[in-house]
Length: 386
Image (cartoon, rainbow, N blue to C red; front, side, top):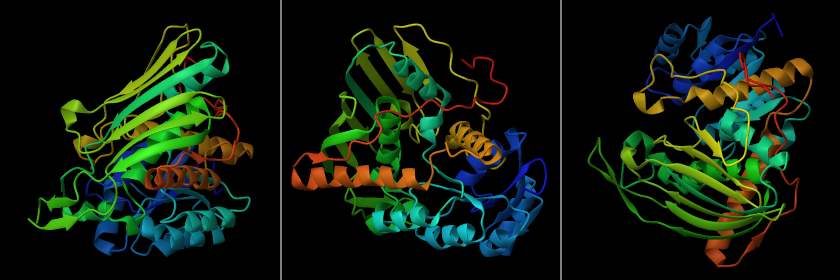
């Protein structure tokens, strides 16, 4: 660490409504222990524009030069999934902490490879929904036994993406080879929140469908072929014995956007709800319950970055919680933040969902720890810490 604040370099920050600009930039700005030291893209013009727009100390047209910058403490990788591997390995070789967007790799083998290379370095994976303050409070309520025996749960989750239309720039999400799909992104985020609250899923039955095999690219008039599922229904059982039914819907318009996670126990009911059109991982969530609970912590960050489109509103909330956890880990020498090993676990679950749908056979997974522990840190400025 070169100063009292950890210095972050972001690869993939640009000014064209990028995810990094909408979430990572304002999350870093909101944390007193972080500073945006550098940004990088692959072109000098876009890199300079991003550096100026986001107030970075410097900019690089070569991402590997950012990685080699000895003043950088944390390298954030927010580019397309096929580019993750080489950048992750370079950052780990440079002995940097690495925050990589999810999914980590284009395949389970590639994800395992990166996780194995992390060694004792701090890593964070962009499965940020589990760190939402309302989710953390739900974990606490259940861990304290306030709902009694967990009986059942049901989830409905939507996204506006993966519908019958797309921009050409986003067509790679429709291709299995990219590693970035409806299952590995939208469904993976939903199931990660389920596991955070209820414990790891150890059995899963699933059905997937391809509802829109042909996609209209609205900006070019072309037709593209989607080769990945865009709908999933599943039933899972957690190591704690809770049964959960999950439906994830794609191509849902903004006015119908919904996330609802209702948990029924022998002593009460708990519900997490949200309505962000881009999915549960992006916006904030609301917690309600039939039992008493302290209000969720105030998030460290909110709003969007200076160049983000309005559909990313609130994108910094959950990402800010990942940075808060990572800063805590680096300064305290702990390893609490879900990192690359967790990315392997998440993709193993998605692969089990795929197998269940393809074979029509229930899939069993290892009975790992039953429930996410409560994060030991609380958001900056929180007045509700329990």
